[in-house]
Length: 227
Image (cartoon, rainbow, N blue to C red; front, side, top):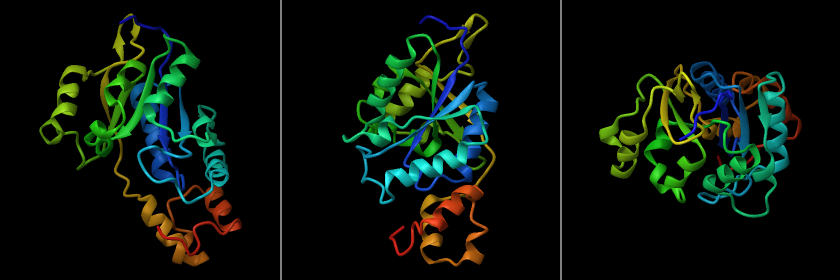
């Protein structure tokens, strides 16, 4: 595989319903630990592997714009969110590879729990044609090969690397890396539950960027909803 002198670009997908402080911390940790030039945020509209989020896409996009506005290395990719068709990661990555060209190193950022379920994703082995996969490890939540599904463990054994390349540059895709992230016990489900039942005094302590919380309160999002 050819090596590139370009700095790698991080990719972070999800429903972001709502985007919260752990998402922001994950992106910053990946940039710091992996030397990423930035992170492109890719909210889903109608994810193919799960039910569509209850929160309208225009609000999820608005919250993301507010959350990332202060970091110039963060960018927002709205294509999946605005698509009328169900979206799958393998197709998203193929789109980005076609858009960005064959040489820029792409790094798809996931958690250890997502790695453990990687073999349930559509055409998951094809992900490596377009991107590296970087797995965040938190204290108490390490990647343990013996606990992974056998097909995923086999890919990890073959593809795991300490870096994206060597002294000549970075490979554009195909590797699995781990990086450390500080522990943050944040759950979008718990946040939605608190928003559905809380008062303004209790909501101020939620792990949300202040502009995101303001948007939620201004538009009465998550009120009387099922988490």
